[in-house]
Length: 256
Image 1: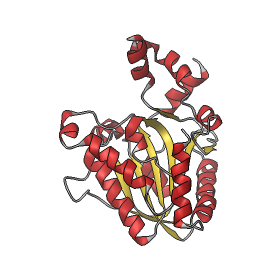
Image 2: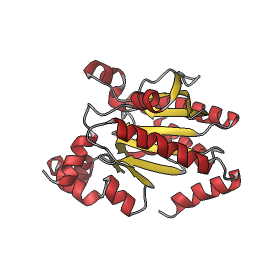
Image 3: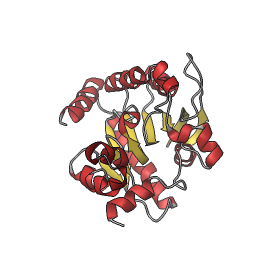
């Protein structure tokens, strides 16, 4: 198995820490909030309030399950439109009260079911992209597993985008890439080599800003380094004038 194929496998490993794990282990007093105030509460996206070194923050994440039943309940981390609308509700609340936003992303993509399309999946994702680009508080996004397609980008229009060492971030899955390009999904490993989807490759291309080293499988060193990095980065970002924060965020994505 090639290095890239191994990373793809590790990124999808069900034993990876979930967004809720990070919310409880990196932050203090995480309190989950529910619902988009329009349709329902989508279990594929979690979010709420917490403290980071005494600083109030809003934490939002795409949640995969710990077992089969949990994954079925959360649609294997594939959000419905109401999930993205819940995330946006929490981000606008964070803006109102001046709280930085930290997002944790682990999804193969937004839920592709007909009911999601009927409720405006594309519009919900597009609105998140638009609103996040102009959100007047710092945003840090962390890829903690898969970062797939617009379903991931809907939480990743951030001032800083980080990836754990053995994660992936791509416009679509290697299987989807292979099916489109060669009409053969079994060539996914070959596609992954071409796509440049690993943390090391994306950091080299300046698509992401930091790689969070994984010391073995989810040791305290990884969590401690992530927490320290978040504290340091927020200390910097919160000191920037709002106009400068938004301009730098705009230029970050314009350079692509």
